[in-house]
Image (cartoon, rainbow, N blue to C red):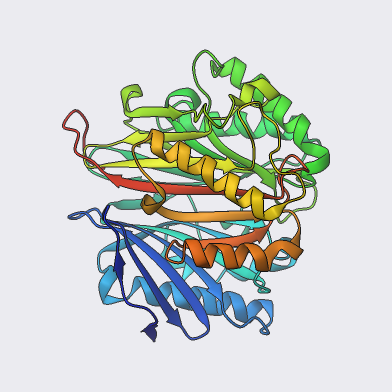
Length: 405
């Protein structure tokens, strides 16, 4: 049974935040309310972590199922979920459970250990109404944790979630090129392209301190081929430490695209007062991307760290000051989309040093107690960055030029 832990809080911009419990699983939930098309982000984490991995997985999944069956979420469909785990090789098989065969949601699993001492945390994205379909052919490990595309079809747009893109070349350059090639082919099946339809990627690199540069080189080469340059645009992205369930894969990617989107609906946010164009230090991603629909604006903030507009690390060795600068950079990007921290629907915090967890956790609880968030171990692409934060925000707008979400 789910029991309410805190009262609902509503901010001035329209997001509703809620904290609930299911046994010893805490659930942080955000809701963007809209008639017939509300959106939800949920972060599920163990409050007590002495249980073995199988028990923790079971409790997390039971809490998610209970959430889906609650009166507040009638007519809501699970679209996407990502498991953050402490040991992908040994724990991957645990996601195959009794409830999986009844869902078509996109499934992602990455080894980025939750830093609250548990073995698993879960981020889930849910949408009211809409048709959710997947090319997942059954509840088996082979189908669930290999390349999978799930579609959310609404009245006008089709949202594509492609997860667990990987290769086995044991070479980060070749793997990256293969992954993007496979993803481009997958988009083509839906009449989409990387340049025109992909909104967001997450690229996980095993051994990021060693293998990140060659991944970046392969991505830049592939983007050039596809017409993604500093003269056109790139894609919002997080590139960070993360491990797939098979040790012979160095690079793993999840991606999100929208069929039916028009170029004029998409804005690339720069934050040039605080950040420099990423191409200036050799990487090719957008700091943040805003997508406008008739009734709302989605803002995807890439992995953001303590950096200045010259591309330099700000406040080396000082985690407390790096948090402040990272948040300040995010605020600048959100402001460019006429939004703010109060519009954030979910947040992922990545730390290089596990010893910084208590300080960072206390900071987040004090300053952003309502936002669904998870803190995981995942070194950032540049060793000097002790913390990186990504987030998604949703803002209510009215634009009759575009179809509603």
